[in-house]
Image 1: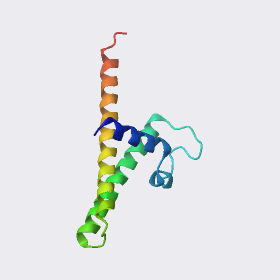
Image 2: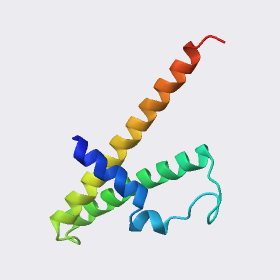
Image 3: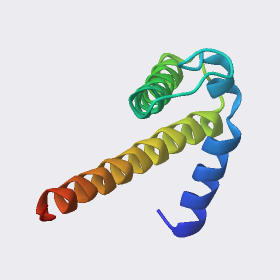
Length: 104
C-alpha cells in the first residue's frame, strides 16, 4: 500500500462513505463519542467491509455476481480497511509502551 492509497482511505473514512452513513453512530446523533466507542465503531466498519467482500466473492463463485470489477474493488477496500486498522493498533501499542517507559 502506498502513501496515496492510505491518504485516500483516510479521506474516505473522514468523509464517510454510504456504508458508514448507514451504520448508527455510537453516542447518538451529535453526541460526544468516547475513544472506546469510536474504536468499536471503526472495528465494526472493518468487519462489515470484510463480510461484504466475502459475500461478493461467494456470489461471484455461485454465478450470481457477474461484475468482477465490483468484487475486486470490494476486496481491495476490505484489505485497505484492515491495513489501516492494523496501523492504528500498532500506533496505539507504541504509545502505550512509551507511556509505560516514562518515569513518574
